[in-house]
Image (cartoon, rainbow over all chains, first blue to last red; front, side, top):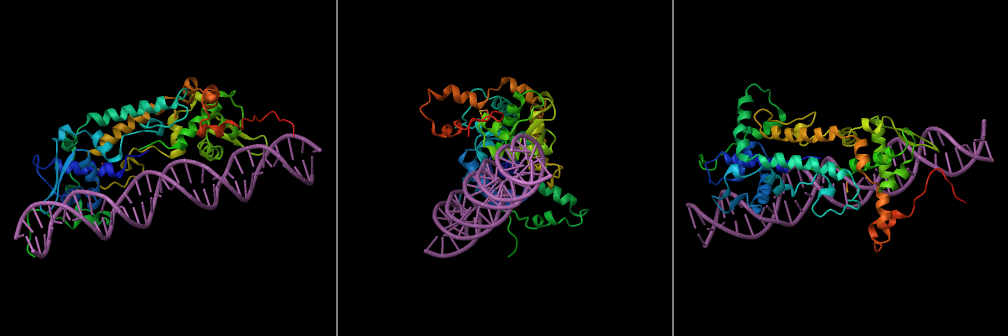
Length: 170
Length: 170
DNA sequence: TTCAACAAGACCAATTTGGTCCTATTCACC
DNA sequence: GGTGAATAGGACCAAATTGGTCTTGTTGAA
Ligand code: FES
Ligand code: FES
């Protein structure tokens, strides 16, 4: 009964991408570090988003991902469903449900009510809306770095901080 | 992102138990067959319900389970939480959340909204209310038995139909 | 033409789910 | 009161899902 980590990362990645100028292409690695998410996992997740027509991928050197639509045209619901498949709060609510006793069962009615509410909430919020309220993970890291006595879990994520366009010596 | 089968079976078992006269004791096997659910799995699930104080167990010959409260005092929410633990639509909403970037994150706000709605729906429906709308699985079986050309999946569940009080020859 | 950057996806370990089956306890009956 | 059948309790297990990593193949730039 949980939204998977993949969906969470997908949203964070899109949030990062939405902060860029519209239509700009960005590589997965930068997005991942910006939100403190494992790079290659985010790469795999973005493949799903690409297949769902939410982002567009460009291969080869200088490649990366870019948004197909504007952030306010992307809903949280479709991001989650792109990653996890159609939302079904219970097996009887799946599209190809094989539940044996649909007729007199009172449970599916209740589950379906809850599911509708969830889908309604996720359906009416856009990526753009969340971008407004969201501060990237990396900023939080910087702000708390000095006051924090080396938190072991977040310490590892701090170092790599590279940008794709500028290339330093050696 | 699904309510587990255990919760579903727990509800079905309680629904069956609610159809009995108040306070009566019934064995798991009867409840299980009545709702078409694997017997020993339901047994394990009812242990959780027992620990949560929703049902009371009696061991030994003539034993079984009985409701502690009346069906209208049992909410669907507490049944689900008794079986699966506290509902958390996402890891950051768990009681001992270790999410690193709570502060500026916009996602948890949205997830928490959805979670509240779900808990509200499950919190305001009682077992009694569902019992009214629910017809047991076994009735559906009997009604459709003749018109159905031996459905392999449900065929096995039809036979055992024993009652605990009456004992036949041999 | 070569090389490095990149997406794509095969692969894998750990956890969770969905059960089964054996064991310990209790009661009913003799 | 002893004995055994009936019952809950809980250890155990297989399969699916999750949460990733690593290799491979493609592409553009130098
Ligand atoms: S039909 Fe499956 S839970 Fe209602
Ligand atoms: S803090 Fe974890 S999703 Fe918001």
